[in-house]
Amino acid sequence: MMHHQGSITETAPAQSASAILRKLWPYFRPYSARLSWVGFIAVVATLVELSAPYLIGVAVDGFIGATESATYPWLQLLVGQAPDRLRGLSTVMILLLVSYALSWGLNVVQFRAMVRVAQSVLLHLRAQILAKLHDLSLDFYDQHEAGDLMSRLTNDTQTINDVFGVGITRVIRMVLGMVGIIIAMVALNWRLALASYTVLPVILLVTLFFTRRVRRAYREARRTIGEVSAELQENIAGVREVQAFAREDETISEFRAVNARNRNANVRAETLSALYSPVLDVLSIVALAIVVGYGGYLYLHTPPLVTIGTIVTFSSYVPRFYDPIRELAMLFAQLQSAIAGSERIFELLEQTPTVADRPGAREITDVVGHIEYDRVSFRYVAEEPVLDKVSAIIVPRQTVALVGPTGAGKTTFANLLLRFYDPEDGRILIDGHDIREFTQASLRSHMGVVPQDTFLFSGTVMDNIRYGRLEASDDEVIAAAVTANAHSFIERLPKGYQTEVGERGSTLSQGNRQLLAIARAVLKAPPILILDEATSSVDTRTERLIQAALDKLMSCCTSIVIAHRLSTIRNADQILVIDQGQIIERGRHDELVAAGGAYSQLYMSQFRRQLDIEAQTSSPGGAA
Image (cartoon, rainbow, N blue to C red; front, side, top):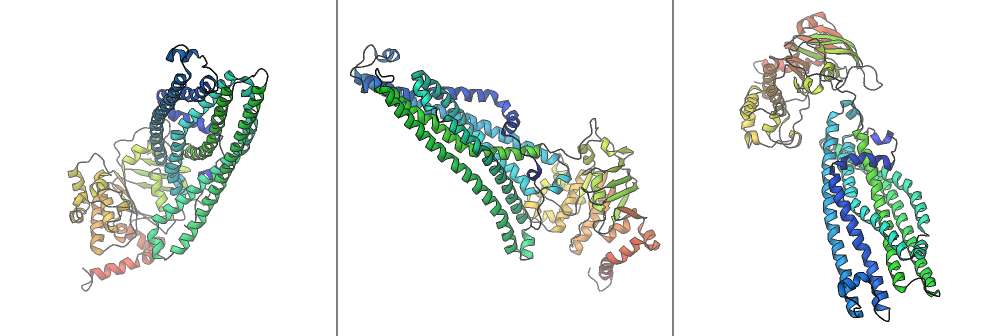
């Protein structure tokens, strides 16, 4: 709400429509057989539709305007030689009705088949986007807003579906219809056909004029709807803070500004689209006037160069030729929006993770838990180094507490071990091997993480604990909860382990969420544990339960703790004091306090309140 990160689209160059369509084609290729079937139906439907104006011309020339019945060989096959005018006219009218009914049925079949293809493509595309989002490194998320990414996954993919699902069937039908009409008109009377095409070059020039402008306008509209989604996502996620600080008016004002940018972009895009269609309407009327006028001239020629029925047929064909162009103009606007949406999707799909498995990376197995940081340096973008030539050795089953002021580099120290980022210099080793030799998935499978802000998924308590090891049985989940001191509070919930925790665990207290996170790590039983202790306060009883659970968890693995609890720091086998990206002191608690250095000062200042609370709770008159 205070500051918005950049969008990929802001810096990415625009791609041509043909390039975007080439990128989309591989998603449709698996359905080429069904697309061929759709194309065949479209051809048949087009031929049936084109027969209607021809049949009207036959009715006029053969049975309405003529003094005697005209002879049509194909009609004689149906009604016999020299049918009377009424019988012939009735037969033609029945054929006309059949053609309309058949055309309707074929279009329904075509539409249904294409929608199934589009929905299948949409399913695949969304799954691929989510897989890409999981594959991208954390530095990508440091620079991009979650709401904008959500917009790409939902709004942009839906736009593609709307155009390439429903729209493509119309495009196929209209293009085939236009080609068929050209052939039919030339076959009937080439002079009148050429006259009807005189406005076509003007239409092409108008289309070229609007194409780039509409494309740019819709590209901006798609970008700004991403901003709106990002603003909404941030407001929903931070609703407690908004209400707590009474910032509703300011937040709404900021949202209005973002929404106004999207409104202005959409108004411009829709205005350009609206200007395009009326121009085509006028040109279509001009073409019809030319056909009627020139057709009349040819009819009045001696001898007549065209029949009345042919003029009537052309009068029906010309709107059928230019109406699709008008419809294509309307679809053109949607197509520009879909191309802009596709562009945003492929910008995301083409992002390269900065942390990737090396070629030939292998699975890590039988981890003992010996960790070494060898002159590791790291910085975020162009900032000052967060870690600068940091070296440390952590022996198996040792608990190391990271201590230091906010922003010193403690979280980065842990994130590098997880390979959320790669160091720009130096290396990190597990059991003597550079962690970049291993696949990220296998490396992280041997690590447990208990974050500072516990994230719980929507679902049951059982599901959230089992997230640590998906194949675990119910009994194993319950055993992990018992070890984590979470079983008692879970049993008191309305449905026990089947209780829904709500979004992000909103129905549970902070302390209970921490216990579930510990249970999740216990179930995984990792050889290496990374713990970022919560800074939020909980009641004394829950605090003791959490500490006891952590003690049991850390006793059987190598543990790196971003420490905020005094008890954790006191019991650590090694304390690393980090400040300004460097380890300035290391040792055990008593040693560092006695040394009187930075840790001693931090201990007396930062943890004085905890010391006072401990003194009060342990005194005879203190709280139990």
